[in-house]
Image 1 (cartoon, helix red, strand yellow):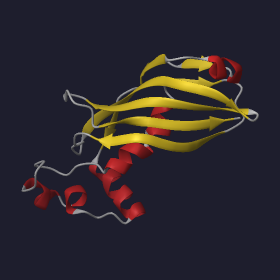
Image 2 (cartoon, rainbow, N blue to C red):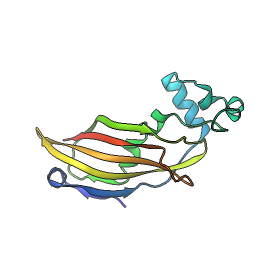
Image 3 (cartoon, rainbow, N blue to C red):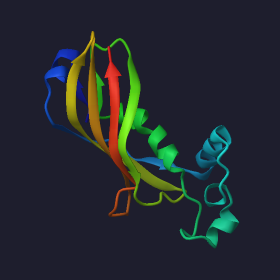
Image 4 (tube, rainbow, N blue to C red):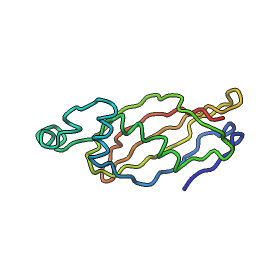
Length: 149
């Protein structure tokens, strides 16, 4: 379920649990495309045979691939109805706390932490967790910072 707020409501909002996104699957071709785009061809991501012998027993998604999915996943839980545009402003306290094996289903659990007016926009922080179906420990935790106008 998506929480819809206006810029004014967002600026006045206090902590708010935004819930979870839909599950999305991270498949090996997506991992390989990310490796190609970022020039990060570490064998734990792109070599299934070698990865079988590695610490995770299979290839795993890049931590930064998880991070790059935040705008897509966040759009499923938060909508700013009168925003003309939004930008990624930064990240804070991001940690990659457990692997995401290729073929895993992941989703975002998000909480609005803070918001403040900034010029003619609103700067806001969202606590984020990437959850992996079947794993107790999240794969990624941290805060994402966005600026909307």
